[in-house]
Image (cartoon, rainbow, N blue to C red; front, side):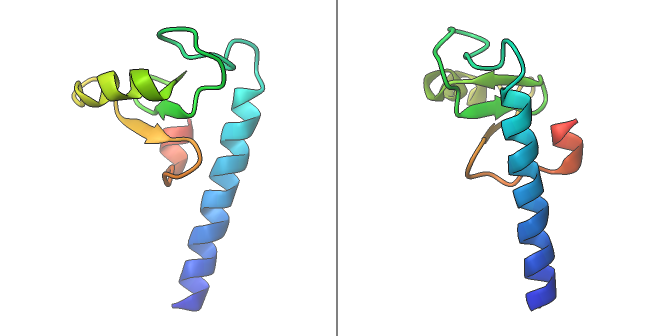
Length: 81
């Protein structure tokens, strides 16, 4: 049980590090929809970063956009791709 929990934590830590790296790339420092700086959410199905306000809009269209928090949600490897 402890080993599985440790593996899960380190996998999520790797995902968070990868997201931070991706955020450093040009153009990723602003919401893809409204341009607000420092987006805290991402659409893993669309591959864009969005602000809190726009994430609410995306949540209303789940068949198009799957939204997750950059710091609080667990991101799977295929979602990071």
